[in-house]
Length: 461
Image (tube, rainbow, N blue to C red; front, side, top):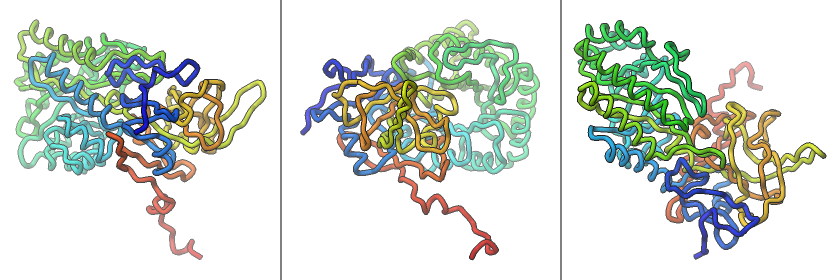
C-alpha cells in the first residue's frame, strides 16, 4: 500500500495547494479524497492519476464519487435541519447529464432538473423517479412536452406559448406545472442587480402575474399549478440576492392564493458558486441552505402562510469540484521575453469555458506533486484556434512531454458543453472510489465521429 498525505501539507517549495479542508466541497479546489503518495503523484479516490491515464488514456475526466455524494448529502440534510416544512433538492443536470451521475444523485434522494427531451430521457433511463423530475426550458417542443406529460414529470412553464400549448395537450387530466417568473433580481459572481423589469429570455414578466394567474385559474381542468419557480444566476457568492428572492417569491404565493390557486411548492433555483482558484471565497453549502430556509420561514410567518414545499436546483456546486481533467503534456513553445506555451492533448473541445466565459482554473502536474514551482506558463489546447487557452500564467514545476497535467473543478459545463471541434473525439470519463476506477463514459472513436455522416451516392467514387 502506497502511503499518502493530504493535499496542503507538502513540504515547502512543492505544489502546495492552500485548501481550507472545510469539507464543504464547493469551497475546495480538489476533490475531498485528493492525496499525494510517496512517489510524489496525485491520487483521487485512492487511484493514482498517472495510472488512470495509462489505463484509460487522456484527456480523461476523473469523477470522485465521495465528493459528489457528500455535496448531495449536505444539501439534502441541510434542508432537513433548517427547514420545518417539506423540501426537495433537485440536481440541475445541465451541469453534467449522464446515466451514472443521474443514478448517483437519485441514490442520495435528490430529484433532477432537466432542460430538454434528451436530459429527461437520460434521467428516466437512469431510474430517476419521474415525480422528482422537473422539465425546464424557454422553448420546449411539443414532443418534449408530450414526453414529460406521459412520464409524469412536472413542467416548469416559461411563457404564454407554452402555457396555451399545454392546455391543448391536456386530454387525460390536468398537467402538473410550475410557473417560472422573472423576479427583477440578477446575480452572476459579484454583480447584483435589482430592477423592475429584468432583461431575460426566461420566465413570465412580473407585470403579467395577474393575467397568468387568471388564465391558469380558468383552466384548472387542464393545468394543475403546484408551484412557482425563479432563478437569478450562477457562480454566486453573496447570500443576500437569494434571501431577497425568497422574500419576493413568498409575496407571489400570497398573490396566487387570491386567484384560488393552491400553490404548495416554491423553487428558489440554484446558483451557489464554487472555488475555482485560491482567491474565490464562496459560502459553504450549509451556510447557503440555512440562509434560504430562514428567510422563507420568516416571510411565511409574517404573511401568515403555511410553509410551502421548498425546492432548490444546485448544479455546479454539486458536481464541479468532484471532477478533474487529466491531460498529457506535449509540445512547448518559448516566446522570448513574452511567454512560454505548454500544450496539452485537449483544450476547448473538452473545456469550452475559458474561451467562452474567460473562466479561470487551477492546475497541477500529477506526476510531480513534490517538485518546486519554477515555471510560469500558459497552458494551450491543441485546436486550430488562437483563443484555445486553458490557463494563463499557470505556476508549475519544470515540465516535459509526457507529464500529466490536472485541471481542477471541471465537473460542471465541461463534458456537457464538449464538442467535436477539429473532429476531436470527446474524452472518456471514469468514476473513482475506494481505489477502484470504473468507466462511465467511453472515449469516442473516429468511427463515432462519422457515424451520423451521410455520403450521397453522387459523391461516392
